[in-house]
Length: 153
Image 1 (cartoon, helix red, strand yellow):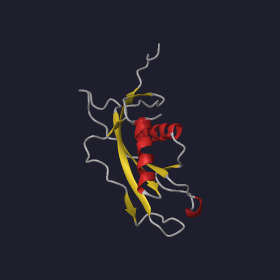
Image 2 (tube, one colour):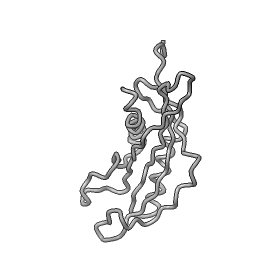
Image 3 (cartoon, one colour):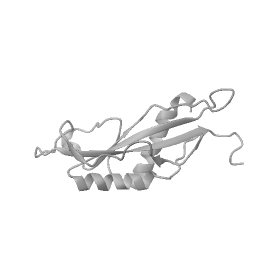
Image 4 (tube, one colour):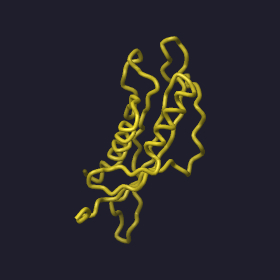
């Protein structure tokens, strides 16, 4: 994996962890299913760009942090909350595996205000009976650095 692919690798790792822990449909970056084939609740992982700090005197050492948002869409408030609770349980304080990288623990992003309570999203797809879809989200932070060549020996 090139250092330029870090953001997508983080999002893929997070998506894989949620897929392993839940049975919800999960989309990456956009909902790609037709309205009449959507199953509720569903999740959307929004791949973020990576931030790359300067952490050594020589400059950039390959480290990166992402803040990934996962949005849950459901038919009512309870369905959205249950989906986000399961996402949080699958990710918070867990360590993903990304080939070629050493990953820190995923944390629910503490620097931002609490996630909003689930609310109607009049811009989201509506249910077949015309009712609105409810949504809310969580954000997670993940730090990774290049793997050390002799790790695992």
